Amino acid sequence: MYIEKAPKTWSAICIALYLAGIAAMAPDTFPDEIGLWFGLSALFLLILLPCLAIPISKVIYHRIRIHQEILRVGRERIPLGDVDPVSVHTALQGANPTPMQRYASSAGTIDAPVPGLRAADRGAPRLVGGGWSVPMGMDSVVISTRQGEQLTIATRDRSAFLKALADATAGTGQF
Image 1 (cartoon, rainbow, N blue to C red):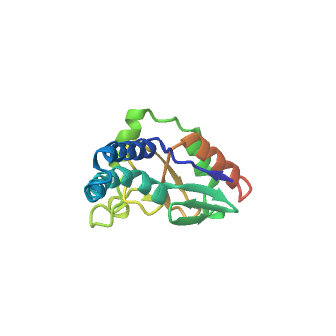
Image 2 (tube, rainbow, N blue to C red):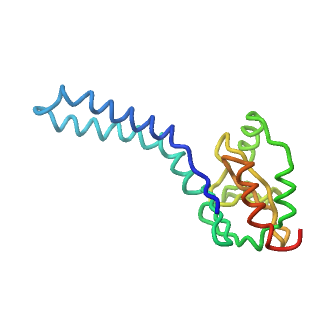
Image 3 (cartoon, rainbow, N blue to C red):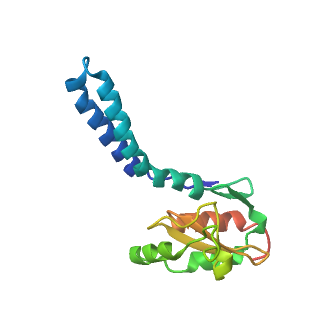
């Protein structure tokens, strides 16, 4: 079993700043101008929500779990029996990219549902999970299925994910 944990530092900082800001306004506005305080809290909430959109989308579309013979990435479920163990071991033995290589790779990995931007239209591996691209700075791993389909999976910890996937696929077929 493997579960990739999402870092919560950015979300915690944004929420803490929001709460500190509305708490700092409270002594000047209570009890006479409570409507103004609620209005400003809602206005600042409109600033907070876009700051939390990316971490929330990472959790929805790029969460990785390996459990009970299923590789689950975002909204997709792939039976481990369909994953080619040779491609997993090849990816595991590959070199870890530098931070700049990760940024360049994530900027170019797009699979949006628009003609010309689909991975199939460009001959690129399909992005798994339901997202339209790899979030900026995240690493991505390309593996294949036994049917030959190339899959791109965005991951936060490349080596831990590939080790867990290699262990999970070790007994699923010939290697």
